[in-house]
Amino acid sequence: MELCRYPLPIQTYRLMEESIFFPWLLNPGTETINRDIFCKVCSLFDQVKDLGYYEPGRTEIIGSFETKNNQRCMISFTFSLFANSPGLAHPVEYMDSITADAGRDNVYSLADMFQPGSDYEERINHLIEAQIDERNIPLLNGFSGITPEQKYYLADKSLVIYFDQYDITPGYVGFPMFLISGYALQDIVEESSPLGVMLNG
Image (tube, rainbow, N blue to C red; front, side, top):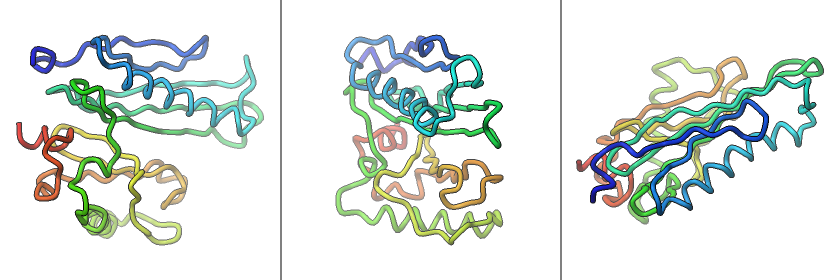
């Protein structure tokens, strides 16, 4: 497919008058992906407003994104939002991500990356637990494992699992991230998923 021969063209847009920037795929047939991107970025902004941290003209808001993967029609973005104002004891920061197949206009959850009925959660949990020990990562209340809605993104042939601040670690750790080689899970990866396409390319 011609669409997949080169990286997908992306336009950067700004959310209203705020310094919140997000990507927009320019290819036709990616309406679902673009809608989900916009919804995720708006949701980050809504979290700040819902907590009462947003005061127009007083709150410093910085929203940005990073392209983690853009090849073979598979895209993966992370979105971050930083907010600070005089009324806050300390700044707040939020993060989200999206992984999708632009050729199919389909967004994938972590569970979608793996074959139905596979033990992917247990396998990933073991790999994360090993990294926690190796890297001496401090935990708040132990590690209870990932969920099917776990936040993640793809970086070439690797899967990056991450957690929000205070989810499993003290705030000073930030967003704990765990890079896992796709080859460590290849036997249970769904071949048609973004991770499967990257591993088999």
